[in-house]
Length: 261
Image 1: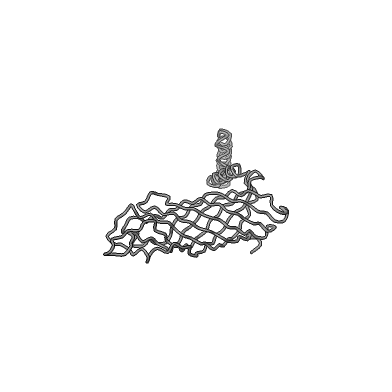
Image 2: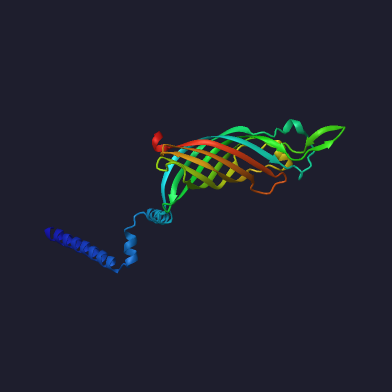
């Protein structure tokens, strides 16, 4: 019995030794690439690391990047050219034409920083509630049978999301160590997220995308807050049977999030 146990014990030891030596030999035969891959328990994490490294190299010249919240008051008017359509329904000109600036509001966040430590910039993302006065360029008439009319009734209240990128030029005004004045210029983009009225759907003139050119001025009070005044000139991003020009004045203030929370 003891002989059998000893024999079994020796066989087991020999079997384990063979497995160990075989594993060692197999490890030695792995290529360098295979050995490196063996240590990557999560290949997805390695890909993320490479992406982060690439982004860090790409944006190494963008510094500062202070995050702020902003709010603004908007005064808006749109100029409408309805010569491109003939609708079965006509609208009395004096009922739809106000030719005035109406009041709306905006809110969102922006990032202010510097490129190569000498070019100031800002990126912003926000939501706009826009109310507009409508100015119809064309007046149609069938006197004496009907008063002046237009073929189109544009939406005068809508909501958009807005993305903007601005270049800021520091102006040599006053004591720049305390107060900074900037001239601002750059593009912005609006996309309507509110529903389009039935009148616009019938005429096929509903256009959700607006591309803008922005310019204006900003005042930075020792980094505590920024006051800004921008003018936005916008047009339909895609061709439309009713071209519209959207004119807006935006007056507001931004405050750094680290000073708020």
